Length: 230
Ligand SMILES: Nc1ncnc2c1ncn2[C@@H]1O[C@H](COP(=O)(O)OP(=O)(O)O)[C@@H](O)[C@H]1O
Ligand SMILES: Nc1ccn([C@@H]2O[C@H](COP(=O)(O)OP(=O)(O)O)[C@@H](O)[C@H]2O)c(=O)n1
Image 1 (cartoon, rainbow, N blue to C red):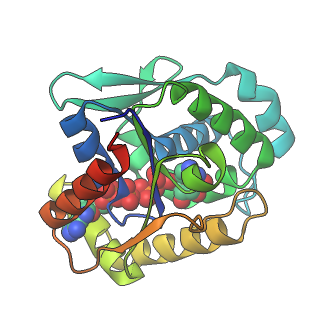
Image 2: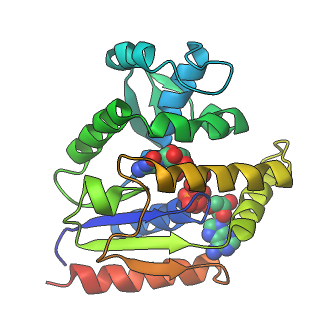
């Protein structure tokens, strides 16, 4: 089997990271959650009061702060999966909350944020052997990836999955608020000027609305084996 690059893109909350983490663990690849990077920049901006009251970003100020912002991943021995650190602080729980979810797509639309994140992602994946998930991995970060997947499911199915996940973790969750957030992020992510979310021409599409997690993992493994064949 040759070492390849695997790009998994698609809409919010459709199961990208679930399938990406499972595959990476099983084949010994590094998993990189690029959404966690945009979420970390957003947390930094919230903490440093870089949002105006109308939700727009104080872009010039954030740009000046970008050099103070360091995002890294460290393997969690217990879960076997990477945790996200912002300037050395574990932020895994905080970046998944609704406040960050409600602001992240505005941050991710800023060209200077994308340039900085994409450069780090390309560096992290330079030796191949990575499964990277996000919105622009197959189109912008690794346009030459040997395997590209584009995942979709209806907004209602995706909101239900996120709702169940949050409730399962004992977090407060409101289905209507989550659905609205998913729809708003879909809109901003597909309409922004720089690297909008879209299926790469050579990506394989997977609508997993009626697939179980086990079925989609098996589907991805099959595609990996085909793509990595010598
Ligand atoms: N095929 C599926 N059926 C039901 N739930 C799923 C499926 N795939 C993923 N999930 C669940 O949906 C939620 C969102 O999945 P996640 O992988 O975080 O999505 P994404 O990375 O696309 O945002 C998680 O709680 C996950 O366990
Ligand atoms: N490669 C990426 C990854 C995420 N993002 C942005 O970051 C947000 C959060 O990404 P995520 O993957 O954590 O979102 P979920 O699908 O987990 O809800 C997305 O809604 C996008 O606005 C992006 O623009 N480009």
